Amino acid sequence: MTISMSTMRHAPVALALLALATPASAQKVTTVPDLTGQQVLAQLSNAASTRAVGEAIALTTALEIATEPFGTSSGGFIFKLDPSTGLLARTTTTFGPAFTERALTSGEGQISVGATYSWSSFDKISGFSLSSLPLASINSSSPQVARTNTANLDMSAKTVAISSTIGVTDNVDVGVVVPLVSVRITGSSSLFNGSGVDTRHVATDSIFFGLGDLSAGVKYRFYKFKGGDMPDPGGVALLVNMRLPTGSRENLRGLGVTRTLIGGIYSSGTSRVRPHASAGFEFWSKGVDVSGNPGETITVRNQLQYNGGIEIEAAPKLTLIVDFIGQQIFGGGQIGQVTDTPANALGITSVQSLVAVPDGVTKLLLAPGMKLNLKKKLLLSLNALVTMKNNGLRANITPFAGINLTM
Image 1: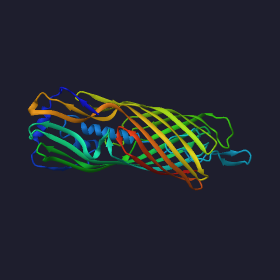
Image 2 (image 1 turned 90 degrees about the vertical axis):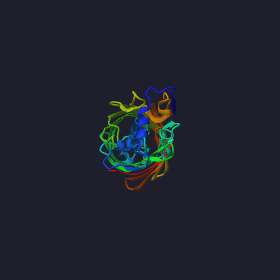
Image 3 (image 1 turned 180 degrees about the vertical axis):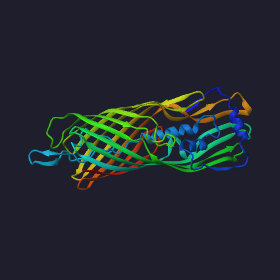
Image 4 (image 1 turned 180 degrees about the horizontal axis):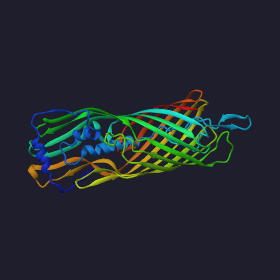
């Protein structure tokens, strides 16, 4: 996205003075370990712009990490008493979806625990390549004033999500997910003058590890489709899920707001192919702010989620899954490029800079995978999130691996 302005409301004199004050010889600055993730990105990105470029990149990064789907915490095995035998029997021969939910509940007293591991390597942010990120530039006929600030970044996130689900009644499940997140920023930025000399080189290799935004939820199946319990024909359920602000926004592991999702779930089928779908709106307790153009504050708030997919009983111990996941974050989260034309200040012809823009983030993901019954009630999950669209911070493929045990 490019925004053009015929005249610059805030003259770039400060930018020019900043550029002129930079030493002519190249220098290397390595960020120190006690900086936060936001501060590291600011050190890398704010050398040639009065706009908060680093803070905009930090918000987009935190949004992506905090809104990435978890592997579902629902138990893969659902048992009920078979009146014909007097024994517990499985009510479904599939093991459930990977990232979405089905209407079926675990059953009273049933407990499942699990853990998933995911790894995302990001390559683009709002269409700009992280390997050649055009942070800002000052264009001038004078090489002493001209500056170009670019970055070469390698950003990734690893998440271990520990989950548990308990069947409170036959129709009510409660669950919790505790994410442990590690965000890594590696790379450098350079500030070149008009003669091509690197006048300021900043490098970093920083890791920010800790708790992410904890998730707690309740699922209530209020309608069951006609049919018996063996197999369960499915139904419709209500889902209420809260994401608590336990992750550090400054270190890119959370958003610092309480998020409450209210949604509905549908699942059906007694054959080998069983469809499921869900949709909900996530209300945020307050907006997440970032500076945009001078005098402008952009507020990101609320999210729409919609999902659908199928479970396929490929074999008694193997379920194949395909999920489609959609997310819409409102109010901001994207980064654009603004071009300002100064009033002939110090010979500057134009100034370009990345900046936060008031455009929301749209994510469309395809999630193929499988669940394999290794032994007794132990499941192995292997899945991937394949990005079809993401105009925030983008990872092409995010692999997931997980285990789940029903007790």
